[in-house]
Image (cartoon, rainbow, N blue to C red; front, side, top):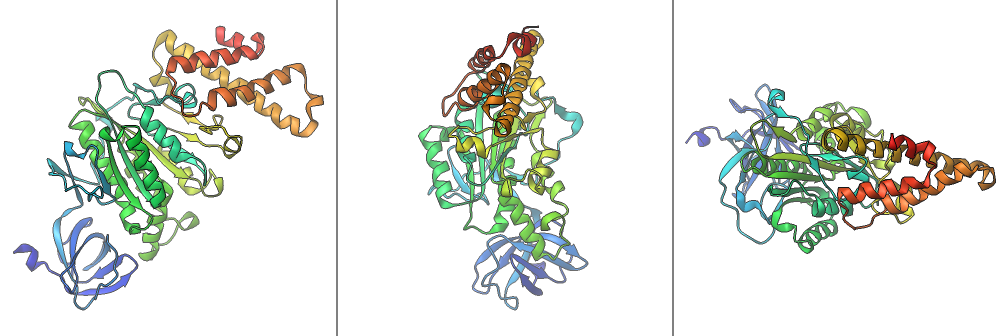
Length: 449
């Protein structure tokens, strides 16, 4: 009866995915609504903004066929929620959490607010457990730690999705612990969706994976919900069921473009490159949901993937993401052209939590020194390579030639491992072997000390 009393018929303008309702009364910001069309069909909406007695409502399934004179809006009195249970495993849902795999709806064990609850900093546990991805450029030089948020910065046409699948397939935690993957895709094409699902099924990783897929043909507004619903499922599995959860979100650029589109429809004052001024806060509300909690067995480790427009790492999306997250993995177009996979450009890569995840005592010191030595030798080899373009091979010293040879071998063998999975021991042994190519008094001597 309460819903009937709050039924609204005073709809105003329609702008893109938004409708404007007057005399909204006691509705709350973020409250979900039922939008009932003239023919009785229902759509889901959410209150984005309250201006006096007027509400701005985003309609998730789009605003086509909405007659402002005949449509009705009924606030539900609750925020957006996602139903979760252990039946999520092996299932594929759209960006709003509805099944798209031909199976029935899950029976929820509980409903969770998709916006989550901010982690109390005092309740956060320090991320200090190693996550083995099987990829040498990450495990050896930019180690991923349980509870970390480590984004992948890609470019148009680079194999970010293949790298994501390889990480999903190969990621390992401590033996005997429950591990699973939550995959959220935003604005991907049908071909990409087919690739992701096919690759997961082929590797038999689907039985421990939950997938939420928003395709490019789906409403843009749905992209704003996809990462939040995926993270709600991850929080349930991590903090209530004790799983170590790896969350892969792709592509955050599509998410930010949807955020800009909604901002334009709301006639907001744009910020850098027309993106909303609050985009930093919005991205932080997603990224900061990763982590570990004291007294909880599980964890949420986040690897968002974004496409840098024009390979510009100073673009607002990678720029703001870098501020919020704890490092970045950068893909290189030059390495990709050489046929190297994964084409990880190690010099601008960083994992700020690496020292917390590479062991203790001599184990940590050995790993750290090896990584530093590899960075140093490779950076010098890259400098020599640039020099060759200016003075040619004739102007190189014998020492320069050794570093140039090391950089080529490092790219070919250490970075370019293909789809082969390497343990951390194999990665460190290979790095130490490659360092024998440089003079002992230069880098390897420092490593031994």
